[in-house]
Image (cartoon, rainbow, N blue to C red; front, side):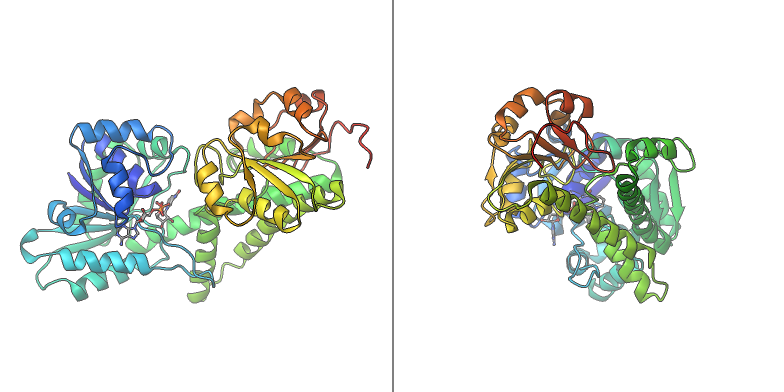
Length: 444
Ligand SMILES: NC(=O)c1ccc[n+]([C@@H]2O[C@H](COP(=O)([O-])OP(=O)(O)OC[C@H]3O[C@@H](n4cnc5c(N)ncnc54)[C@H](O)[C@@H]3O)[C@@H](O)[C@H]2O)c1
């Protein structure tokens, strides 16, 4: 099938590439000319495992194109996916101006003779947005165009987006038109995934409800981790004991610094906002947000307690990306932590295997030393903080790290380091929801 994807970011680029991989002809459109130029020259505008090679092979096979020309994409393609940003406003409501803008552009590009078109919202939007998109198209498109609007929320995880798209747990398609539903089922037929066929509003709600539930699960185990710290219990053991119950499952039961990224914070906010507007407020999600914010504060408090005064202390931070295997630092808790340390006067050096450029941009003006080697980052530090769960941190040579540091204190904000190895290497090892191990003869 001929598919257009409007918005070539983390979602649009990976989705478009995976559609091409299964045999569709895909045009990826972006209004950022620089990004399109990079892609045309075979350069990557973002990091996502396995994506670069897949893009190249599909471009070579003639199934994947990049352009800034939305009008020609709408002319060529029977299905048009919208994958533009839906960032939060200051009050937590969702900024739908990108969606509105693209809907208007699609309306302008539609011509009566073109034939049937399906416009698919892949961006995460509050319930009832699909109806508004249809309204915009109806209002601004010429009379006689034949269009349906569908909701097809995306559940990929950055860092494993290609795998998630090629092997989805389920595909949610929301439409009030059987004709559009049938076309969408053809798009996804090669993926052999269960398809959840629902009405437009339910599909939109599934996405907000799913992400908010995952955030709730993270906040739940983080709240438990605070109790563990007081009780001298081990949150990792508690999580294992909980997670083996199949009704609960072990996924998203990792205690740490809290959730971040471009989705959970904004989707929880968006769901709170839309539920309030509808008169059925999801009060439970306000507690999810409170626990999430408290998790970072508690962690900072423990570092502060250990060092007494943060001013002029040298702190090395491993990790800037909001999670492993991505260069994305949007709403990254690691970045928030670094900013807080700097605001309190600590000297911070930071390292991330993939997010050094994006991290440096996010930290501009904060005077943070960005290192291109994790050992160099630790040199002279009084505390090492592990803020992102990259595998290479867990397998680091800790004896070497300890020798480079001024004091052997480690704060593992993601519970990924091997505690025994850390202690064996001579560290005083602090983690989340567990006892501090390996108290050395450090004074204090
Ligand atoms: N990133 C994720 O993990 C993820 C997962 C599921 C759903 N989503 C949702 O998908 C949507 C997109 O997220 P993302 O992370 O891919 O965002 P992104 O910022 O990485 O990409 C969005 C792209 O849209 C482009 N764009 C903006 N306005 C445009 C226009 N008028 N015409 C053409 N292109 C335009 C931007 O230049 C950018 O390249 C959001 O609603 C997000 O909530 C994201």
